[in-house]
Length: 249
Image (cartoon, rainbow, N blue to C red; front, side):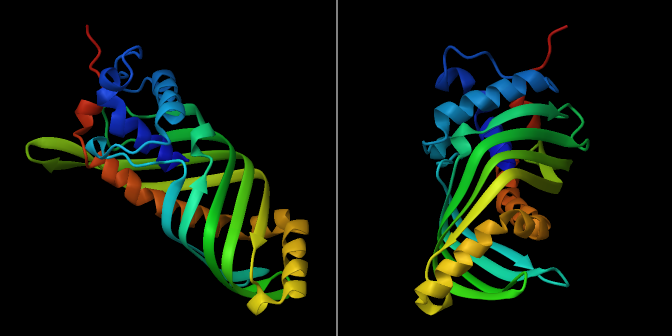
């Protein structure tokens, strides 16, 4: 995902030769094609590995300590859905297809466009509220999946001086997801009432497009919150100028 795209790219960009001797040197400022190719190489080669020396942990599956989708107000879907100790699958197969920004001006807007085959968030959940006309409640294990996702990550920043170096302090971070389809599975709904639970799961999937449309902004905020801390940590790890290669005159 997008925060994911940024995290892999900038944690490893200055270590390219050590990790992948056959790869090109780090990208020049603003070279979107190079940045996209570099990120996609890292997705396929590094997503399943952890390397503390590079401030990089396993990204597929990605450990999600907590995520909350809180849909309130006058929406037809009014829920509080909390995921704890979940795993997010699918990052290794995503690809960056467009890059803007990442020049020498830290305050400009940066953008990554990403395509992903699928994301699946799997693990314990708690849900309370209503879905369309039906009440829903439960605590158990869930699988919330999306397929053929178009993702856009946009953020800007401001310079942060530290130890005589300039770092990028990430601001105005926003992530949007547009899946072609999605599905839901919640075990132990309604205190384990199998008939009610089966009927609710069938109802959720029969109306999955309408449900996602109602909850898309809350879902985007939840994923943005998840990745913002990750991205800020990556940019705090190395001075901005050391993430790129200066173009020789």
